[in-house]
Length: 420
Image: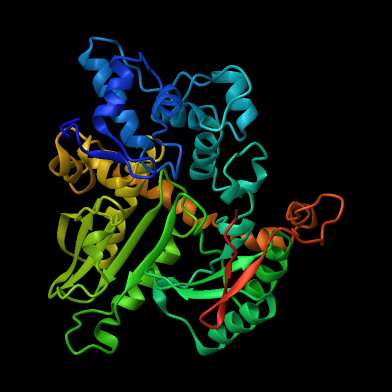
């Protein structure tokens, strides 16, 4: 890693690069888990774990030690190798993966990785993988402070009718939820009890909403400006294209979350150049940017192709996303994936635009299969009594709520009482 020794790696525990390197060279830590125990790096939000792993591998290589990129001790393969093996052998569940290619009972590292691969390959509802360990996927919602969950319906392109706004308001009022408009042009509802989630989503599904997948590693949102429909500067209809893009890739599972945006002109009101893939209108079509992100380590996206038709743009996005899904390490966003790629953006452009690997047509077909087999996870839960039974805090009293969940008033809404 080319970072300075003082570079902060884990902001939760205030651990810098030198402390991690010392744990490796002095304390002989040779796994991420050993580094966690020694330094506490990666034990907070977990966002720094990929960087910790990179520092570990780089330091071990500098010591002349052989480093093999494997998922964990139970599966002696990289994510890319495991992806190919599962696809070739058409394996549909975690236990069969472990039986054929692994050992032991698995762990909290390999279970979500395999579940994500299975979802990316076969587009099956992730709740049908009972061994998954990610609590957010387990309840199809992000767990929040105080032991409650958030509800995030999809609002493609940020466009929503008054009727649907009223439904969201009625749901939030009935279940006492805190509401907030997000940076991704959605409406989050916070403070839901786990036992209320199916009932809440039944109302939303009946009103025409779908899962927003805010809990999953995959496509989150496609942000848009108002474009040529309303704005005097807009060159193309960015809202319609954003909705088309979001409807195409909704539910897509990936090594990490994906965000996108469509701007109607170079004024960039939708901030497309800060997304994993972003689209900006030009006089002749669309410019496609890739591998950007906001967050704790913001990164501008890089220009992949210019003046594309809508059909060309979607074709290149299909190829880009499938290439990323097949080759990225677990929990690696598109920007660090590109940083590690030999040849960088020029190589990526050669693969996606020039089809140097001859895989473009196959990747487009694979993406179309995922699009054609999409189903809303929450709709399946709402309509499946067996899956609905999972959403209970107490197994023997499914409708009883967690008595430890408490709220207090804040600006005419509620917030979770801090745990002591």
